[in-house]
Image 1: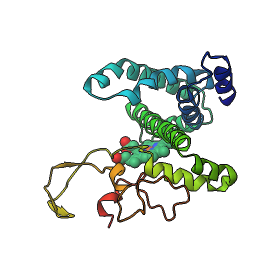
Image 2: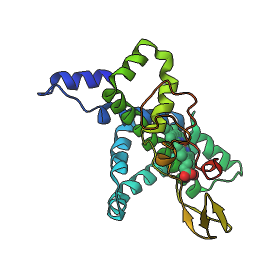
Image 3: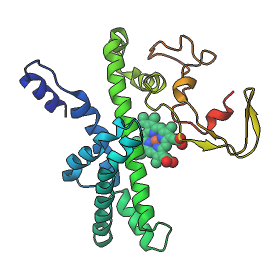
Length: 233
Ligand code: HEM
């Protein structure tokens, strides 16, 4: 992928290349396909089908994506058929076997499970890599730190997860009983969501919250933990 990036940059008129297309989108998809056990040759069409997901802004966007969603579902159903006849290494094939041994997943559940994995694992990681890239490009001294000391990379990734708006908010959840949270009355049945973007720059928890600091310690960001955010004190 990096070779392809260099090649595009060296052959384009303005010596530029699109990191989002060539690297940030391709790498997470390649890894998820590998984990799921989907054939390498199918990756380009997968990338194409998933391309529009991050651009969805409203209902019209969702409707526009439906044909591609259908393609993904059809494709997964075909793969399950192949895996049923021919078990292969990979998570999807294992899920199919679990089904044929009388365990829980029916055909719809198999498609839904794989789809959630693909969708949940893809966009988040694309944002992590692409936003992280931008943050390093805008903060040369931080970039220099990690170049000199690559062991800072894990803590840099945590800082990108905190400040890079990798994921803005949780899925909506319903309040199951009347309660009060930080002086706000919540009524049973109300719809609420956790906004990580805001929690991750709370001044009570983070010094200089809007500064990108890859040496930040501790870094109790909430980016993976929507369930706990409601009891975070
Ligand atoms: C930077 C990377 C990632 C971040 C920040 C992230 C964050 C999250 C968050 C916050 C949730 C909970 C959403 C909610 O309940 O409202 C979630 C759910 C989930 N994530 Fe991730 N995730 C990442 C990568 C991945 C990867 C690589 C996979 C799998 C390949 C994955 C699979 C899932 C699944 C299956 C769920 C449950 C989805 C559901 O319940 O609908 N995630 N993730």
